[in-house]
Image (cartoon, rainbow, N blue to C red; front, top):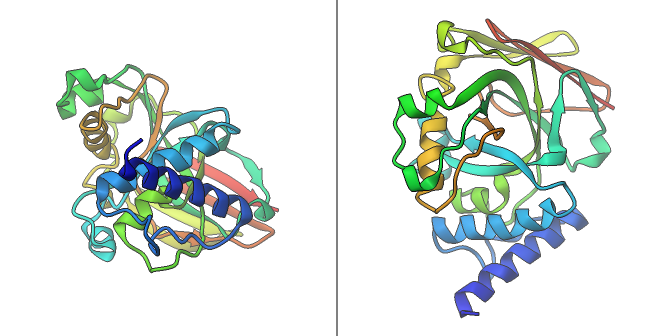
Length: 264
């Protein structure tokens, strides 16, 4: 094994150990910190593969930094992606325990479920090819777990640590989404019936399905593929919101219905 591979293995293993012990992530301090985007994704894969062994594998991907504002905040030049574990997939309404997380939060997103494979060997993919491969879309909560990372936020730290992703809660599937004005749809977030945030479908790359084209090509560039049945969440329309015990969180969106999550 090459020295660089040993470094990545050490970093991924250390992240997993820090995750299990609820310790601060120290990926950006020390000799094993990623030096570029590709190393950060390699560390993410090693880290998440260890988590996936006890989680039933994977069920899809998350996309983050789909707005210029968020990209500038962490020094990114394009969106980034992470993985969704199979045991992190929930259907609305659902109940989660705050004690299972360091600091549980939500983001309000659109989830896309694939109906057909997008093999890396057939890239690059056009928007039409990707859209034709979609089974349905749904409103969703992304579950995030806010953990402290030494060294401050950066795109490399975000990628390596899976961009805080800790699961997803899906609403009802919508099959005729292409007939609907999703960019013009308003999204709202309420906590215990109080409105705390709003956004628009157009806030995510102009259309919240558009990032699926980006990720299909980003994965293909690394020899990976989206597969039929994969769930892809495409970026938040409302800033991340952290939740307390005994909170009912409800997100709703024109055309897409609502998603309910109770924190106990």
